[in-house]
Length: 355
Image 1 (spheres, rainbow, N blue to C red):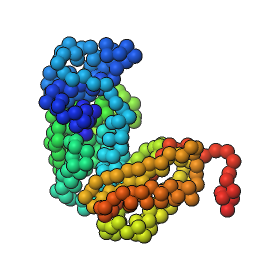
Image 2 (image 1 turned 30 degrees about the horizontal axis):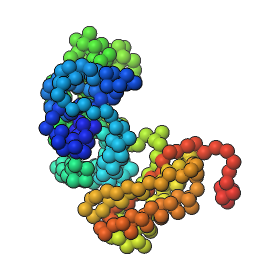
Image 3 (image 1 turned 45 degrees about the horizontal axis):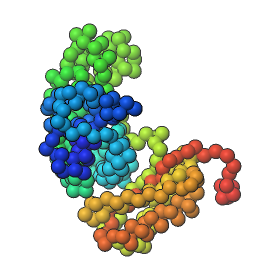
Image 4 (image 1 turned 90 degrees about the vertical axis):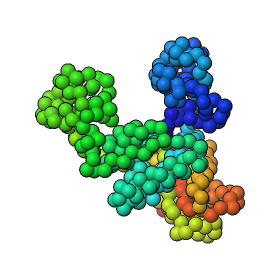
């Protein structure tokens, strides 16, 4: 997402859109303390950047609009956007990896048929969906692996698409400063500089044993591979994720309850089997519907205490889906079920678990 927090504030109050907007994480000292969380591009052009003390930012641009962080509200917006992204991911939304409140990886190799031109068309549709449904812009990077896609996403900000085909990876990385290589921080950058390494191409040319000697086996090997544009890490939700979910498409766009509930039953079965395999209980149930016009609606229910009960999951999911069907005149395209607030199951077994 592009300058996410500040962009949301601009959306909520269009009168500030042409002004410098700075969102601050204030400390317990009030507006005199704290640091800049993010800011729009007008503020950045004035010299303000994230992590800068708010007091310094105000001295640079006293006429900017300074607003406090509204993390809970931004998280609600983020959750809706993540559902849009997940709806495009391969494996019925399984090949999705959220890496921050405003950024995620999705695997679309199958959806694009391995064709980078089709991948670019999918990126255009994603951007259009996010713009239409949330009134926000995002920048997309497309690459043969995660590290290239991640770095490509920053190439044309804001509101851009950068496509790096497999054969173009070398040219993309060639003269890039090592500081731009995703995963390299200030400490590593300084140490590489001491070794005379300033560009990614210089790093890629170094002997891997020299890098292992300086950084250790794991880090040294990773530096060599990353600088060569090699990344075999899969797009995958973290196993420690605090939620388990599944999305799927209906055979055709419809509002017929029998067809919708039939697919919902399949999703419930799949989600609950994962709940059992991870030996967890859940406290929240969320049902998501993507309409024929790609509008996404999400509705959740929170229980008083964690449970690991399939009949409870079905009852709540049916209730939410019934409300979504009643409140919509549009056909459904995709639906999803997710459980959250997971806890490791402990204590006495229920009677049902013995049968």
